[in-house]
Length: 416
Image (cartoon, rainbow, N blue to C red; front, side, top):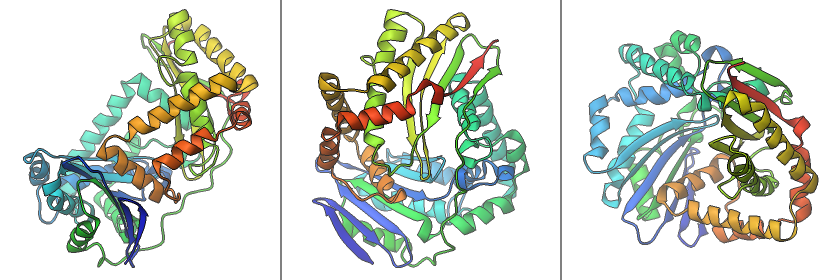
């Protein structure tokens, strides 16, 4: 093992078999957030097996060699803790929030889930129904569904455009052997990052990780490959749906997570649609009354990224709302930010970054992100300094390239 001190209370240890352990001590709390992150998710799937990673995430909770599904549900909750998991496009996360005295228990439960699921066919038939209901929930929630449709429209032939949940056809076709195959090739030390933040000690954490066997497990094959991502499609798409509102996403592909333009883009999105003071909120909602919800969003991946605007509005005002949004995008693309507007945007973004890292769980996510995306660690002060260093020309270049109306792929979900 090799341990490196990254900050005053932050350490990173890499095991000989590839497993990585990162922890950060947070004074003044009595809890710990701990997570096991697996570099396997929907971007690594074939179209015919869409939803496999998410289904496996569900199935590990159905029982292990030592614990039943009920045991798993009770073990941390009876102590006041919480156990959760999710599948994203590029990784799967298993995590717990517990009292500091229950860290050994939490790590043991998480390790058991990740390493020793039984993956029985009988359990699969039941859990398949649950996932199919989850798919139905998204289909019945248009302000969620429209984002899936937008990703699908941007990358119709690439896994970045696949549904994380899968489709009814793909989920129905998956079997226990598919789950075991994914578990065998992806859930091994080289693919694993363990992060913990809160009231803890790194040396003690390493002893617990060792006790759970992580440093002794044999590593598996090389990390899963991701197909090269093609240029995103530029199009307008309307999906007919009998809804009270029309839901619209206007967005474009951007750049990977490690790109130095990430902070300027975050700055622009904060100004455009990041809160009540944003331009879109003030114009679309407050001045014109066209929508209850209008906002910007962004996501960054290994090979690309996406940014855009969402609005939900009455079908009779949908075209007007989209025209207003496109006008705001055009203005920002042409003018960028400078002077007092740029200074105020920097202060707002710095405040949001600082406040977002006030909880152990948020700090745990941050540590995992550095490892999963191969970023060098940056202290919060370094991040804030980097925001301060953003120049008007940095913002202008990003705005001109990614906010131009002609670049936007637009998906409408609602009545004709």
